[in-house]
Image 1 (cartoon, rainbow, N blue to C red):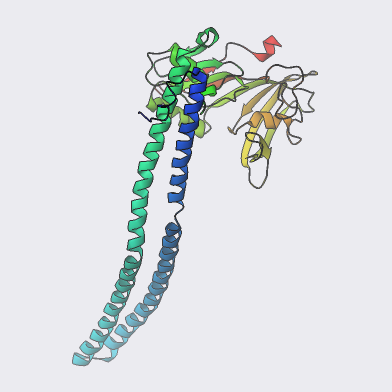
Image 2 (image 1 turned 90 degrees about the vertical axis):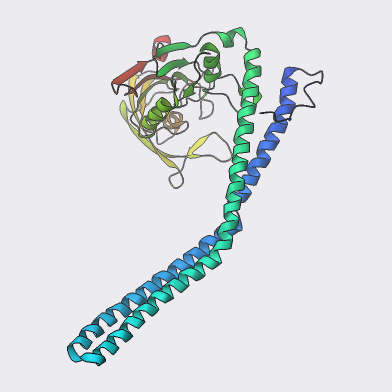
Length: 378
């Protein structure tokens, strides 16, 4: 895709970073404009108006249906009475009048439905046109976003440092998936901006150029180290993602806490809500939060306890909040400046050490373990 967004800056005597910054600003402006147009079309007042009109007619139809039901019951009783008390032409005339009333009810329903269609049709036609426009805008948004990601990745690959080119530790691999030990401080996948292109996915694409499909099945916080699972096909990605969504994957983490805790084991359950002011920080909110659950076990009780976590849900920063919050362990993870304790530590002491799940191809139980441990190195 040729967006033309950097045609007038690519020949300027600027560094690659400066040129990318200029192009990035323009691309993000275009993406922002497209997004605003899509949101405006999605929030058309005509959509609300049509929904209200449709609801009004539905209520009128239901009321009419109930009225007709009562009338039908009366006609049924009258038919019985007529057959018991009348004969010949008198019976024929009475039954004909009842049949006419039934036809009138049917006509009344058809007229109301026809009226509804006449009122709603122009609104529906307009909304259909807007939906088609939204479809084109979404396609343009997706295309521009994909093109820009490709541009950023191409520049990233051309400027990779020796450290970035060093092979990642692949702890498991077959024809369907691979498991990688993610270093602390590295993104799981590239971000939206040029300076956020260094990631496990970016490095793996360089390390495994023969893999045409390579996509992470789940995420780890940038500060968290440990096992990260990648699918090698769309089908495998869908199957594994479903296991994660249905909480069929058993995840085990190691953590070193910043202070002693008063429980040897247990379960923590809190409702987590994304703080709109301090993103990506999460806070506990019983009303607006989403349920999160973690089982924990103290492996080594000391000034800086070694704790094993098994999250049953996968909320953002779940383990970090469960460790730090007063209704959790009241002991932030060592190195966690976001939730209460940093100290002299150079990293967050949280490590994904084990994943257990069903292999998507042969349906066998598979356990993948990290090759390193926080507990052994502490």
